[in-house]
Image 1 (cartoon, helix red, strand yellow):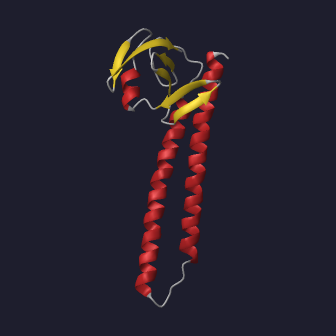
Image 2 (cartoon, helix red, strand yellow; image 1 turned 90 degrees about the horizontal axis):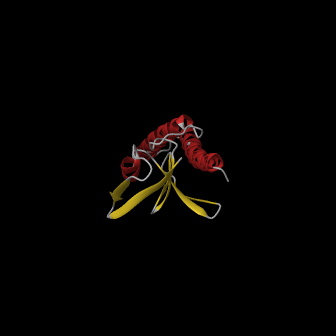
Length: 152
């Protein structure tokens, strides 16, 4: 499998992760909206108002989560899997002595054709340690030493 194919599959996994997260948030917002509209004024007015206030807080929380997911989608749209560079940047596929990394968004471990890759955000601690490095650079992270053996 070519490097481009690997990057394409990793990017697709990241997009699937964001789509699933978006779907869960949208379902949550719909449930909250339905609860708000079906909430009827009971004789216990304070209980009703407390319930509505709690639903409003949940809706605000879901709205913030929705904004975060939209930011992740924007980051994924910026990734050019065809771009090549000697320096590690957004969209780079990196092989190190301690694992393989894809600079994109924080998804975590992705298993692909008997290989394990870690999709990490450029602003994550290890992402920051990797950005700007080149082939054969070394760095330390969490007490481990890493040698960069491949950058695509």
